[in-house]
Amino acid sequence: MVKQLDCEHFPGMATIADRYDAFILDVWGVLHDGVSLYPGVVDTLHRLTDASKPFVMLTNAPRRSKAVAEAMVGMGMPQNFCSHIMSSGEATYNDLDERSNPFYKNIGRRFFHTGPERDRGLFKDLDWEETKTLENCDLMVNTGPWRDGETISDYEDILRIGAQKKIPMICANPDLEVVRGGRKIICAGALALRFTELGGSVRWLGKPKIEIYDYCFKLLGGISKERIAAIGDSFRTDLAGARNAGIDPILVCGGIHSAELSGFSSMSGAIEKLASEWGVMPVATMDIFTW
Image (cartoon, rainbow, N blue to C red; front, top):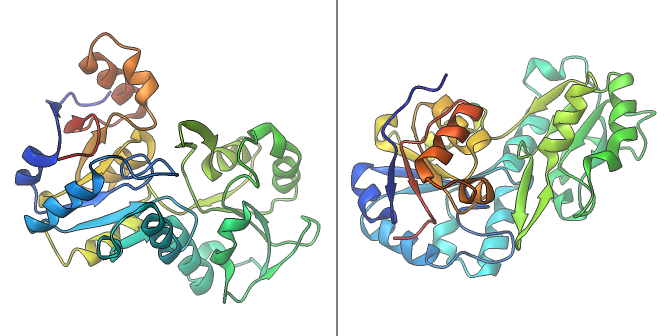
């Protein structure tokens, strides 16, 4: 059972900003839809900056933080707002480069990649060898489907073979799905979840794992967790991750759960149902990330 808390709904950040000293912001679903920045986002970030409220952008994008910044600048995000970005791709790069986790103890250096061409910058300068088949690989690195529009069933044979051969997997994006330009597409997390159902072993890197939040806390320079809030659109990753990290979760209703929330006659009833399903209650909600 989820502890029932008072969950206030706000029209925007103007009131919420006064309650905290810093924010961890989800990117896809809060700041943009994969194609364009949402209206009001740049103005809201300007206002947070003017109010001396620092923020870190935390995303489950399976690309290096620099690539995430370049993509957002291409959408019209001012460069100065992209100085503090942490991506699950960056965490994956560091993990593969350092190999310090016991997970790697008996793993060689040959990997098989599932994911689109745009994610391949993740492997630049790493001391790993890519193989095109599962026959001679030591690790599956999953950054998502090769092409938008594919389904989990398109990968059933690959996932089943990998599980049968006991090849471990790195999931560089725990999200199950995102909305790109108004259309839902599956993410690496959906493939990794099916892999675990088939008996495969997965190392998840990104939200809701607490380790990625430690990077954010360092970037925020020691601000107390009690004074930090995380703003996201996913119960499974953003809100659960915030709770795991010991900070307040705030839900943006216009993201991945928008259809579920709009199907209820009352917003509070919808929030309670989702909170019960996912085991975490937001402290506050807003329709979109605006001032």
